[in-house]
Image 1 (cartoon, rainbow, N blue to C red):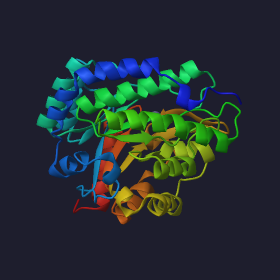
Image 2 (image 1 turned 90 degrees about the vertical axis):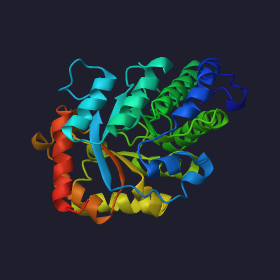
Image 3 (image 1 turned 90 degrees about the horizontal axis):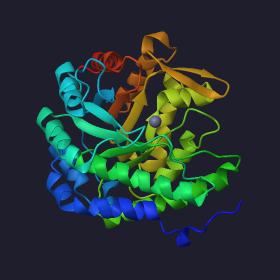
Image 4 (image 1 turned 180 degrees about the vertical axis):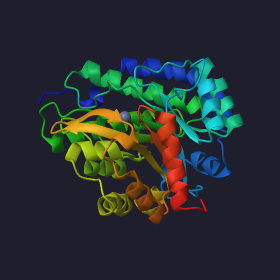
Length: 335
Ligand SMILES: [Zn+2]
């Protein structure tokens, strides 16, 4: 499959994003005042040594994919305050249709999250494809992921989730190598600009979309600064499996084997119900309308002493996030 060689790609999009980003670099450094001391410890380390640091978090944090539905007016800052009011812990900024915050809007978001004690992550736009066949689309994917990571970092977010791409008929191994190559260039730029956050390639919900659990774990093992976003609804929809205690623990075992014990303390998970067909995911469902054995999943997470963030993508996001949090606490009353 002919492709432009990576070394010759001069990325106009990426350069533009970076020049814009540079203007805020001093602001970014000043804003690295994350929510907890532990978070501060890990995020202040260079990308290269973060994987080796024990990420001691107080168990799992639970929150919503985007601004809670019960927020009015629907602004990001109101969303953060609503998450806190609900008794939840974290919120994912939904940049899925575009990175909707400007630098100057991101600064008050960081302040609000810090004041409310809410940990932020971000979800990059859906239309990325690091296996695109057109160089223009590859460059756009790089530029957009860089921009999402940059704005997320100004918001004080520690994780940026993204969908890495589609096979487009290419063999999975070739797709993997292509995605790794173009992502590595983004990692290099993030390092050069000292933008520190975890890149979180997400396990996908469709067989046509790159992102089996194995592929994601392999990518994270090979790519500095990357850690998995494990979407349990997607794992279930992609295969019809992953819906019992032994299957959930097998996922955590694979994370441990491939990325080490510390990766289990630094998870970023998506949990919701899901409707799916033989082709994979159709739509997210409320947990209690779905077949997802979430109590078994929470028990597996508790038994492995998992740490990190759980983002609920159910249509009733805050209700299901609260259901997950209370169910987890009922299993593990000391956390
Ligand atoms: Zn996603």
